[in-house]
Length: 396
Image 1 (cartoon, one colour):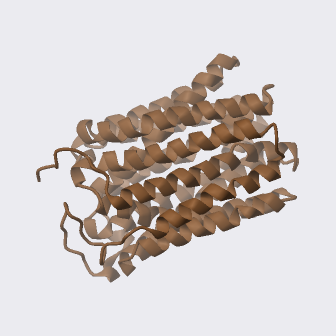
Image 2 (cartoon, one colour):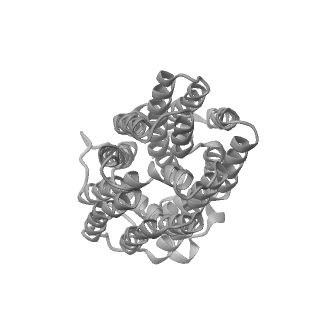
Image 3 (cartoon, one colour):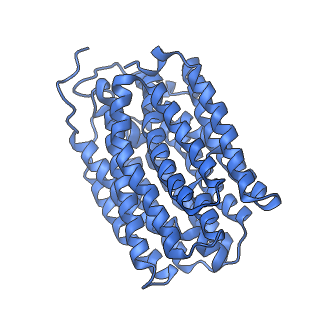
């Protein structure tokens, strides 16, 4: 199939990218404050931080698995996307009234349920709105808006933290999340969601949207992504490490700005290069950047931490854009949201035990043990991606 002369984002991609932008403005006004709020105000320990972050990501990924399958069976995407964004927005109000860490856990779990409901159907909408030759660019485009929103949210919270209390900042963060819900309501869904202007395909019966129908090569790619997720330390651990080593709130949040700035710059080129050079090299590069970021955190020098946050931001942005394009490449057209759901569900199985183990290593030994754990698992995941045939990572 001949690719169009240049990548032109469709209406739905613009709207979904905008929703990602405003959601991440909101999210990243909250996320960097949560470990500080938990430890400094609610007196929770690092293991609780790991439990909350891992539990939240596991809940999101688990729901994504089922939401993708339900979306394929129903033939609808938009309802899942709008309701997911709306639920996440409403439950963020729980952060404002939280007086103990279990309530924060409940808020994070519920907020992540919303993310779980919307993510796989949203990714399927992006694929259906995009020529297969530009699939990496489409996910990179959406990820760039996502990262830009995170950057703006980080800058806002860095600027406002000196003027408002934690709970007041949580309340302010509700406004951009509401804008995201409005944007998703404007998405237009194609009838039956089986084809687009550039990729026609026959839709198998909806009742056949089953995980066991997914191809084995897709399973090997998902296994590699899941192993990386098991040892992927969330930015909360990096924030907490910098803070416990003597940095104040404002300086720590400045590092968080660096993290998001690097992600914003890396997301779009990563998706674009993966279209022309293959998914595998870009994923290996993203995993490698994460490993080096963990190594930099083992160096107890502030300059090294700045480098660590920059590499982490760039690496995670590359990984999130390219992994989804890889899964889309390997998935049958009529099971695209199911495949995305299987990918997210596999991550759900490992995110919680991985984050809990990272927190226990922190408490039992030292923060350095947590970062060594991240290095080892990412290197093994890199080896698994390396063993994938190159042809599997570039198929339309």
